[in-house]
Image (cartoon, helix red, strand yellow):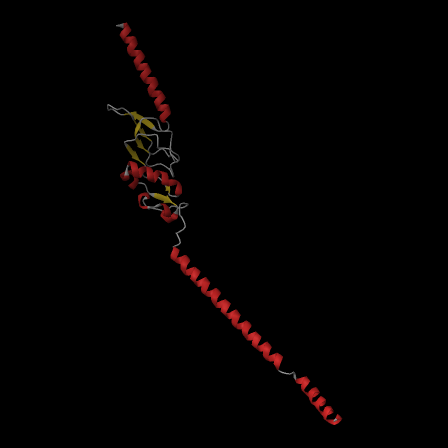
Length: 207
């Protein structure tokens, strides 16, 4: 009988130690074991002013992070968990490119939970559900719009036409300049005419 009491006391003490250790690991959240055949834990982290994702214990099944001050979730933070239920609602999420990890993770895990995630910043997406935004609408993820090949074609055609017009204009100006130079070469200068007349008169007198 005494031996049974000792075993019971040791078991109780061990349970208390395990519970204390688990409570320490859950801090600042509270953890409760699930009463089912598979076991697991519920991490309740609501209303405690969290600004970052807390350390998540293995075998967490239910994770409640609503009503905190979370703005983003680091990439890979949820990959090692085998969750059954999550809630990320009522947090001031900053919906820039870094939120894509949470968006894609929730798309695969729970579209219903994703629908509850609402953006608080930046101003351009304030009040919008994260589920309604695509990558180009998230700050830092926007990609330049692709330029169509047809745009390049018409641009090149315009440049070629301008080059042809400039070439033809240059040829025209050169030919006109040559004609003017040729005419100027054939026409005697005005100061040469009296000299020629005087030379003719002198030739007639000498005869």
